[in-house]
Length: 132
Image (cartoon, rainbow, N blue to C red):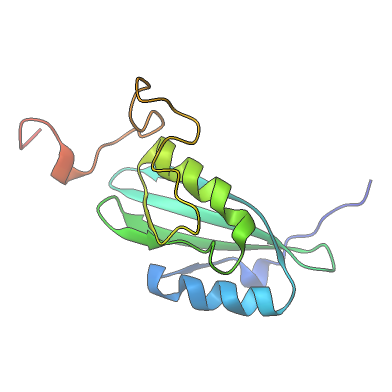
């Protein structure tokens, strides 16, 4: 089995506004989208994107957003991200905009399923009772 190296030079936090430009640059280099992960961190989400270069090196991009902030979809650049983006939108409630294919939070959950079942901490604007 071949070991995969992580390119630590490309493991950076970027702003949501810089995400599409960074993904376009990586796509022009021939990377392929591997997966993405969402972490629920207090009043923020940390989204980690994983890409693989032709050399098999992995590249990570990290984006931190508040739970009330929107995140642009990268599916217009790399369509294979659309399933993971829909899953993260559905399970965590991340506001991902401009999805190439938007399942409207019904890709895996039914209308009777709990809403955003993996969300640990609700955004302050959604807390019950106003000040809890």
